[in-house]
Length: 400
Image (cartoon, rainbow, N blue to C red):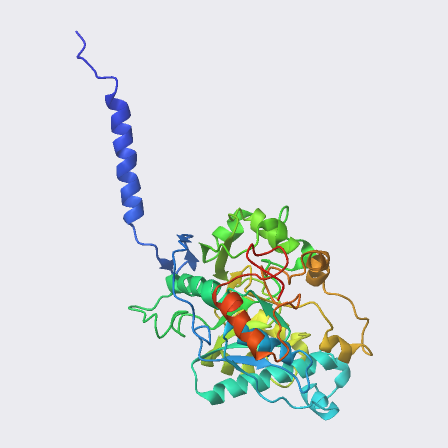
């Protein structure tokens, strides 16, 4: 006679086994593997966290702005609304002699055009200003960038908390080092014009990129409800996020792969010294075939020796408008719109917002032209409360 068997027991045993396996898995620590240089993906919650300070958790905010730049007043007013403390070092009026001194003895071997030489030298001046200031870290801006009105109150704190999870520092003091210790990273791309995991000329996103490329890269996903939905992200960014199967309103902090542009990068003292002396020195080496400062930094992050991370999508993006570099180079080359800018132009015109910025300063509603009363109102309602006081964007808004 066969022994009685309860038909529910096998299912119960399976359920118990699965539960035990899940508990064991969840209790295992998430670690950064030195051997494979990989960080397992997790999602940070978006509970209320305090706003960042006036320097966004860095030692200082330094702006690259040329003499008489028409863009300087705009970035100063945007900073006043969002309560950021900027340092804008005085720049030289770079001369033809400065350009010749940068280039190799045989100028025909040079790959860097005049406007790009002057931009390169301007970044050098700001890096030296940073090193002379004595602070440990700096965020370097170019003066044509845009950012969201919730940058300081929401976006930066979320990115900081995510970088802390990537820190390898034992007993990290997050008050002193909200982005992780300066030994954890060399350069942070918090602003860029795309880190598309490869050269855009070979295609971006669906059909070109695949989830394992993100999976095999050190990264963390985190929710950010200040992000635009994918239909309003830059087309390249939207396609890349779709290809990687990243949820809506979710950013990634990942090791930099192919970061473009240097209009919003954070840097440590050690990295600044290496850039000045080794990675992007002030005298061109034509054998490197480098065409611009941002290309030199890209190489330093992609190929070493810099340890770089990217916030993707970015928190700073350059505004559409005239290029001062292109104006300088109009006699040396045919001026064209770079591929990333060209792909995003129609959307910028439709949204009246800078690419990948939800509610920024591009459309002009939040400038106050020296009117202090208006500035105080905008600082309270827009900068602190995060109200997008643009037509149809805030249910309580009236014209300002």
